[in-house]
Length: 254
Ligand code: MLT
Image 1 (tube, helix red, strand yellow):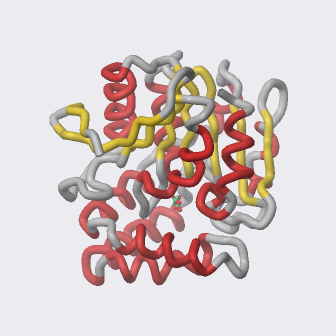
Image 2 (image 1 turned 30 degrees about the horizontal axis):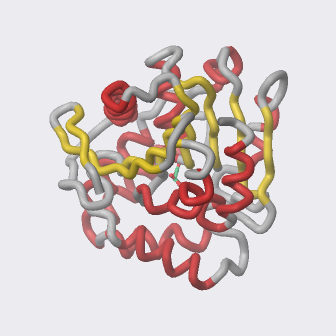
């Protein structure tokens, strides 16, 4: 896996295909492997770049970071690879990174593709849950986070191979990074005003059975040039649950 030096770190990423570039940003508690099935279906049509965010995957664990830090990494990477402006897709926490990136660096994303994610910031109750999850990560490790999250991650009765792959990706994440990511998600901005005023098209792609980020919350933004695609037989992890349908929806936004 190649690495690129951005903001004092070597970030791992994959880069395959030619032509129009697209950046695919993973969610929590995951790494770029969550996009593998989508990426392999898109490479015939695009140059597909899939980073592991700082601290995730095989990176050195991180003690603390913000959504802005993650967006800065993506902006620097896009500039160094010469791919900006291009479509930027983010899954769940990756959607928070994508929205932060588009707001902080106007014009860097030619369009946003928001997958199983939210515009709203965390409520007070949500913030308290982030702190509790960070404590679990540090005290009990990534397996405890996987045990806690997995029942809500997919549609009911997921393909066993998909569930096993998902668990394996989740359990392999460094606990320290997971705790840091909980803090970054807790403190993220509310993007509701931003999404209402954004000037580039936004494609929303949601698992029809997403229990963590239900599509009903973003339906109001899917107007004008924006679109909403609901993926059947998928929950919060639609890119790994239904990679063909998600790749097809993304391909319409290249
Ligand atoms: C994710 O899938 O990235 C997380 O569930 C996002 C969140 O907890 O807000």
